[in-house]
Image 1 (spheres, rainbow, N blue to C red):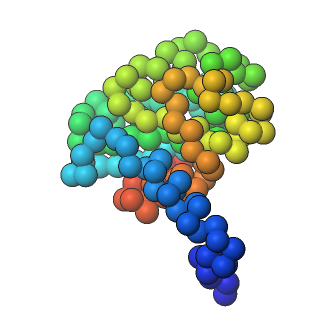
Image 2 (image 1 turned 120 degrees about the horizontal axis):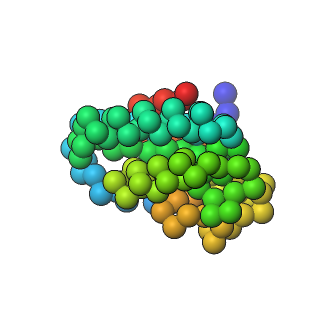
Length: 152
C-alpha cells in the first residue's frame, strides 16, 4: 500500500497542502463544545431536493439552536444555490432560505473544483459562501472533526 503522505513529503507538497486543509476548517462561531455537528451534501440541481435539504437543516437549527454546528457542502450541480447568477435555475424561495440560514450561522461551503469547471471565481459566489478546494475532501475533513454526514 502506498503511503500518500510519504509521496507528498518526497515531492515537497505536504507542507504546501497541510496548512490549506487546516485553515478552512477552523473558523466558526460555534465553540469546541458544540454537542452536535452535521454536514449535509448538496449535489443535485432540482428545487425539491434543495427544499428537503434546507428544511432538514432548518429543523435541526430550530431544535438545537447554538448547540449544533451545521454545514452544507455544495458541489456539482448543487453549487448553483451559492452562485450570484447561477447557470442552472435556483428558485427564489430556495435562494431566500439559503441566505436566511446563513444569517443564522449555517455554513455553506462551495467546491473550488466545481467552480473551476464552471469558470466561476469568488466574485461569482454569494458573500457568505466559503470556498473550499475540493468538496468531497471538505466533507471528509469535517467527518474527521466529528461531523456526522448526511446526503439526501
